[in-house]
Image (cartoon, rainbow, N blue to C red; front, side, top):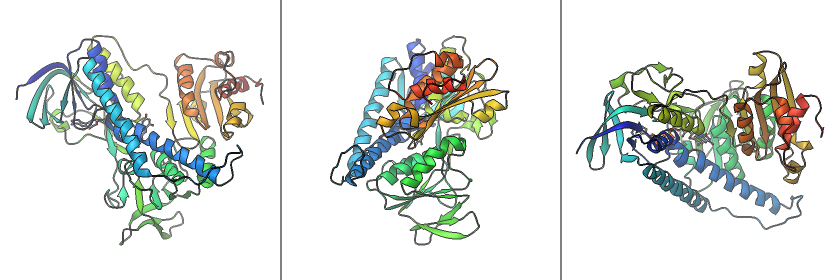
Length: 464
Ligand SMILES: Cc1cc2nc3c(=O)[nH]c(=O)nc-3n(C[C@H](O)[C@H](O)[C@H](O)COP(=O)(O)OP(=O)(O)OC[C@H]3O[C@@H](n4cnc5c(N)ncnc54)[C@H](O)[C@@H]3O)c2cc1C
């Protein structure tokens, strides 16, 4: 097969890689992207998009089920709904496949050449790709590693049979009657709550003393309350130990050292994700590491000249929009622009019920830097939240006490994921409390909670 030479080679077409390639193509850089699977990577195929589709379907099903129970304060009554998960999954697959084609089309439009297959480094400038029709050698001046991440497997609970990963959970044809979730982080709880809404009896086994331990307890309290309302059993300080002999139960050591069995048709293991650093010849190029990740500087350069790395393979937070922002920056650097990582915040959303959003510093982190002011506005005092039966939750703004510069913003509540844009913008633009308080927020919206939280921090909230 004829060798290909290009200026830029991107390995992996997840959100990091495909954005990098599109932007490079737009800037006239001769670019090739290699992908072993489908365009869009984890995020589009087995992550962000399919999980949010399933979560939405579960939400709708639960809403109607609640109405069928005769409990709707809205005065709506319906007969009991039926869920055909196979159909739901087919609908989700349709969205994924439309987006796959969309990404492929955008790459083509930007003039990027796509090579399908698994890439392996031969040296710092050469990659061999195993394609359907043979080995394709690609030589490039610059290479971007965007190989992403994969689910962590527990050695005593290997994936297979009843033990499933998040990828398998998104492709089930039936709702398990009993689902055990190992790991109470954001992926485990997003999926666990969705299956509970679809009718599964869910048990979450978490080794730490709290679920969603990366968030503060005040922020996660409404989620914990909702877990109880959905009938999800949460075992804290408990350790998964393995599968029962019959394969129909999860063996657990409880916080007080007792051994118990949790009956389960499926055991979903969501104990984290690991960077994909094996199988593509990292040993050939011997890059410096930061723990298990590839070490990068503020331009995403690795320890070898001409090789960049972006996205999940470079560390936390492992989020699609961080990967995309890095990809865009690297493309511009390769095209000759002066760029470096200067972002003030990478907002994070947890699509549990209710949703969580964080941007910038938490109150604890901010306190460590000096004196702060905090303003918290509850959705119980927000008209729009009431009309949506979404009174549980709040917006919290954290600012410097001396000059009121906003350092962090957090929210928990129904549908607050859409506030992430406002929070990110405020931090990126260096807003002060007065800027947010002085901006007219449309009424009635949950966004008013943001303005009120800033007013509260200034000592003169209007609606509490
Ligand atoms: C269930 C779930 C839900 C999630 N929800 C969210 C969310 O709501 N919001 C959010 O921001 N993030 C979410 N994430 C995380 C998000 O998916 C990742 O942060 C994001 O996909 C990382 O992008 P990336 O480009 O670094 O890598 P990836 O998306 O992992 O893509 C890497 C690509 O590289 C390819 N590849 C790897 N090695 C090679 C090779 N040698 N040759 C050829 N191709 C190769 C892989 O096939 C893959 O397609 C979720 C993840 C999961 C699992």
